[in-house]
Length: 86
Image (cartoon, rainbow, N blue to C red; front, top):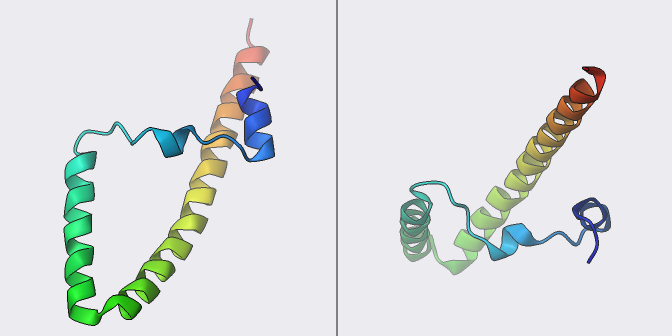
């Protein structure tokens, strides 16, 4: 088994794909989102819904990457701070 750091580096850390978010209300929010997208599909058609969904996912990718970088930086800074103190 490789370390988490190696998995992150190699792009093979997939725990987030196998475990749904544990935040309270996640399942209810996911069900509501699915219902909303079903209504969008019914109103606009499959092709338009797909185009909208792709645009939303593209934007979300860059937002999530920025959040990941901020979180990773924060974690690194916290570790450096801990190493600096007696």
